[in-house]
Image (cartoon, rainbow, N blue to C red; front, side, top):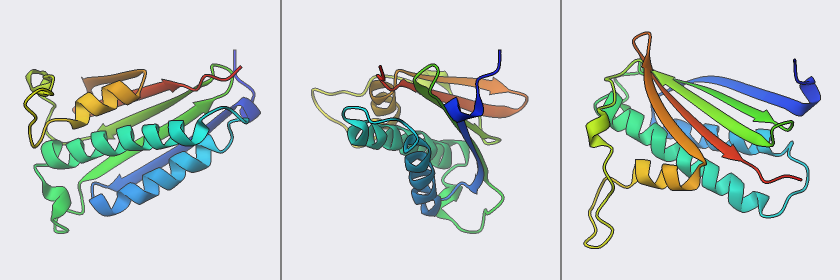
Length: 153
């Protein structure tokens, strides 16, 4: 069964894996979430989803592309982003695809919140801001999927 287009909005992007592009992702996400009917705390929800999206993208730039994102010489490093707002299911799903180095699931460890550490909070933060964050390797590409229920009535 197809969802009527007025209940489903999709944005597709193919951006350079560069820190300079994070603001584009934030603006597109805010634009798609602007279609959500008035709901409580939508500004906070939008910010939390943006933050989770940034954290995963920075991890892609830093780890999948071996920090090439900080070097403008590697403009071929890309991230494909698909954002879907589905008002029928009251949720947003963000799929991220890159062809960088596969994610080592052994690196997915809880940060030391008692003693603190300098790095290693990004994935932990994203998982705590979203309802689900998943990773899989598909057809020589990394695929991250972030989902969030929007708590609409």
